[in-house]
Image (tube, rainbow, N blue to C red):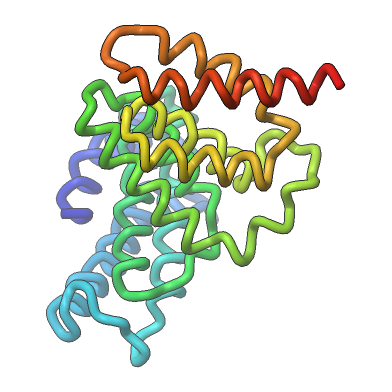
Length: 236
């Protein structure tokens, strides 16, 4: 699946480079990145065949393969950005989430979080149905669980673009959109535990969101209670 998506997404980028007249020089070209990714994706497929698609794999460097995929996809997305190929860039970034899910299925650890955070954010922007939001909420949960031991200690950082903050904020947003009370409660508790300074603004926005159609009285009560709590704390 990743190989097929890569070929479709990369075709436009490779063509743009070939038509740009840029000499390859010592730079890694889009075509070279596509060839490298094809090899790594072949490794993914081989591991799935040899060990099963969800088995823990100790004999193979699952983490290393994922890291190489993320690096190549990042470089390829930069080429797409250089040629103003927005849709191709988004498609390339999105493949990072599939690579992350492959790594996690084999009990691997995600070391390069930036591409995965970007892919999840893009999915969130495109999730137009309730089912999509439910599935995306589960995807956020899997990634957060995988990286928590390495990232949660950075919650005192002031950088708004740090991966841990982006994961928790976006996971809470998507959980609200899923309208699933269990998912909302889990995401909200995590947000309150790790990003208390963000809670007043978040729950203020969420209270406006749940006022719309489709939200249950229980969802509204959950959000409004937290909004009141964090507003009260801010005034104290």
